[in-house]
Length: 85
Image (cartoon, rainbow, N blue to C red; front, side, top):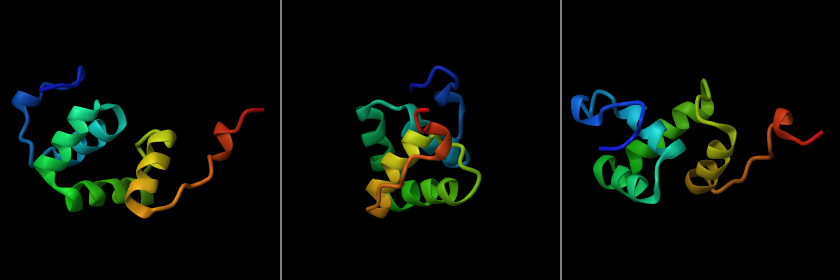
């Protein structure tokens, strides 16, 4: 498939769902994001996002803000370390 860091063909797409979903949400092209929703469905993609959003926050801050708007209907304020000084 795609992603320079992983060889998707050698992965179990269901066992690695969290990794695949987070990677595509953060770095995927539009076509890859469409595939993501077609393959995993809205609910599973949303759940992986929410787990990251409410937990360890591995997704980059701009990515979190975009998908928070999509999944939660809210645009969180930029985090303090991202505000220009």
